[in-house]
Image 1 (tube, rainbow over the protein chains, first blue to last red):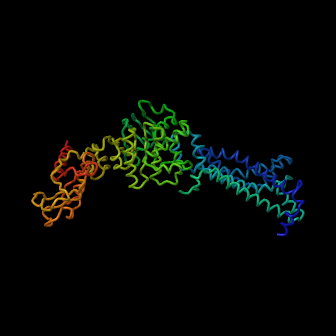
Image 2: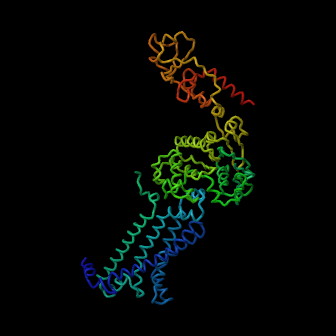
Image 3: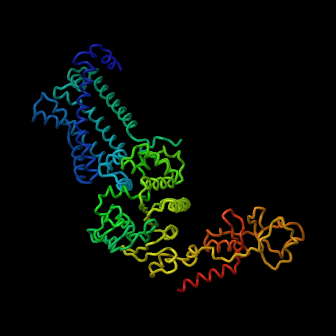
Length: 223
Length: 367
């Protein structure tokens, strides 16, 4: 515990370019940007595949490929190909990490909606897009959000790799701390990453409460 | 009117679901498609609102080939009720019912007012309007399904086994409710079921389909029971056809005797001399109390003090000959008590009268 006090108690660690607020901000920018890109790529694709049933093989392949892909290896590869100095070396591996859970959950969520419901929606006279947006997405929303939450937590935890290519973020503390045998610094960084992941988890729980209909979550009890 | 004109549905793998089906569904009537699984009844229904398109022949809705109408536009003008109700779980009951009005661009207030009106009409407590589907029982959900189908007041209603997933008691009440609604609304209804009893109870006309999607017989229920077209239909109709047919013979034709009724306040001595084996005792309002046998009465007192034997009644002018026969079988006298709409005894149909009526029915079956 003393190590934590050493790190968090030191006023010098709370300001300047290597201060905690700025490092947290950098970390959030890497993670947030990657997640945003992944959502923009994977959600429409997952919706389309789930709704039309076309290209389901893509989902399986991408999920399997993602498991086999080493994030750090990809990072080094991108640096070798594109050099340092841009955000690309950190964004590309993180997006690659975040896409599969979002894609798979979005697709499974849409595909898993009760066929009777889909049938009823078409039978009422909804058009294809109205069925997707008005029925399938609201009903599949808990799964879609679960995919995003899984991706977000992985991305927050993994964004530490940015430090390997000379970028900031909370990974700086861990790598620098280990390199200089400044263990309080390394542990402090790790604790901050864990705290951030928990905060993300809480944020998604909140988003879920606000966006998912009580009729779907079954939250509203009979009065 | 909906016209099937040589309609065939053949799938790419060669399976024929519906084979050259030609029939007419008259306006304002309930036409039931019934048959075993694989007879193409659901496929036939779903071709009307283009959930499936036929591979041959035409379906005309008031003379217009449905395949010339854009499916969503067509479907908004046709009510559709399915087995599990298919309510949207994320929307409140009132908004589920207002689905089609919203699609048609009604303003929200008007659509919701209409939805509330319909919830009341199908017999639901209006407090349910703000709930979500998962909070309702299966029977309640099915009523909501019917209300939703009626929301935009479509002239045609398609019902695909709507009551088969609920328990028998709820099913019976939903069936009664449908008949009551239909008496008010006069929709053109196509109703699919695999349950022949449901078909006979609900249908103005019943189309019996056989496996492979061919029409075996199209007739009103009484004719179907009396004159099945072939062995398949006979077998599908099942046992007790003769008795079931009596449900379609009105009890009005029964000769009633008005001289077998005695008030409960009468003295025992006043009936002792009668030649009748059984008399009906009625209370001050004219309601039946039961049967007494004049030959085993106590020595004194009024008839109110005499234990009466059980009885059965039928409502004159409403119930069928089957109900009258049932009423007779519930009494040791073998006679049925005819009552009016408010339960007052209007006469007695004796065994002889029932026998005459049954003889007339049997006579009709010959020709």
